[in-house]
Length: 210
Image 1 (cartoon, rainbow, N blue to C red):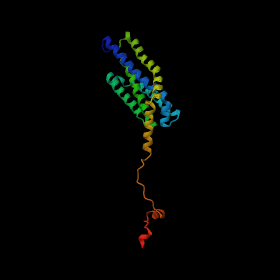
Image 2 (cartoon, helix red, strand yellow):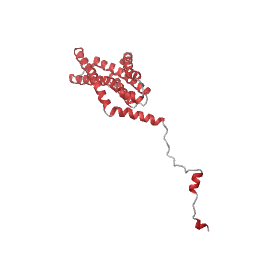
Image 3 (cartoon, helix red, strand yellow):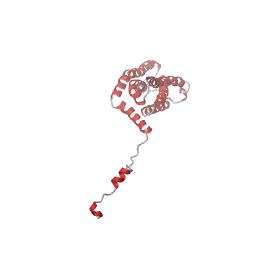
Image 4 (cartoon, rainbow, N blue to C red):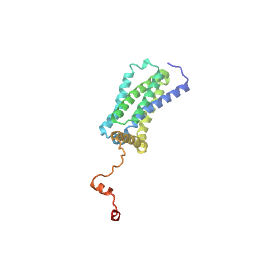
């Protein structure tokens, strides 16, 4: 167990609560964006539900598997590496141009989120003494509750503003541009045929022929 002052311990607990808040917020904010995502990728509701549930399934499985190797690494380094990969997965989700890429990025976010959740609880068990461990766990779980409350309204607000539809609309327009070849601007060819030949014939006055 690490020896820390009380003030530093409280700062660490609130930092871990913020990490827990972002993990659940990432899951909750996805659900209200269903109309924008289904319209951008032209997918049915079943595929959108698969993209949402991929985060939960991968998060649960990765947290279960993290129990086999989490004690082999340093807590802080593992937390920083997992959070960096978690941020990268969200960037990939925002830049997804197809449904398979969106599904893969959500699954990758769930894998990293499960490792983060296990790391947070492991740090609490290592740093906080037994007498204050219950209060520390309660503060961290407050981040879970606050994200569950604020996640859906934040997703609705994001969907109503120009950020959400424009993001997926741009990806849809970029896919349509990639599918359709650009039209080259060619100059118009002169008309051919007997009518054009008649028009191009010079007309001389009759007086000049005699």
